View 1 (cartoon, helix red, strand yellow):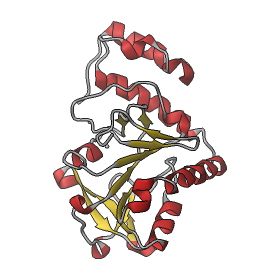
View 2 (tube, rainbow, N blue to C red; view 1 turned 90 degrees about the vertical axis):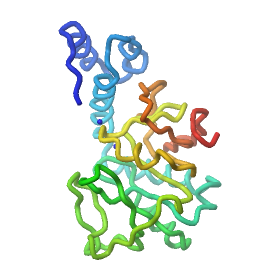
View 3 (cartoon, rainbow, N blue to C red; view 1 turned 135 degrees about the horizontal axis):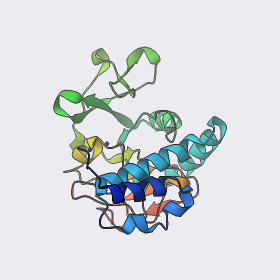
View 4 (cartoon, rainbow, N blue to C red; view 1 turned 180 degrees about the vertical axis):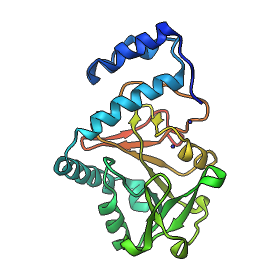
Length: 234
């Protein structure tokens, strides 16, 4: 949702060897615990690994897993009780959210979607009632958002539940986004529950954490719902 660190030759060498390993070894790699590796470099390594892993999920399998994730979501009390939900519009290999959007609208829930405000390096939020293509455009990051003439701003403080994407999560609720920090800034003063959607392969035992990183309260995968002990509302 972050400059770049300059690595010494020895650390860079470790990093290259690390990137050559299969993803399973990432979970137990000592490199994750190496204090000589700056967090930004470590995060970049994990992002690269997870992007490759997620691209390996074919369209049919991604749809099936997304449906399983939605089934878990519909059972969650914060979702059932929420009147206004912040929902990301899925992009590329992310967990699909259009079925969630349509279900929520049928239940008369208000949907707020993010709008990229690059001038202020921030997210704004707009009500969206339909996914009609003529109402949407691509943001500078390539993600769908309402066209200017269809935007209806929503105060983030009125949102009851936040459903957000991520590249990686750990069971404590720590989240690794795409490196821009948009959601971390948007959530700084938010008290309502935050929920991350991910495929099971995106859950790893431990993520490096910065003080600016905002944890989630729940994570839903195609296999389980995780109530995060490190979340803000648990």
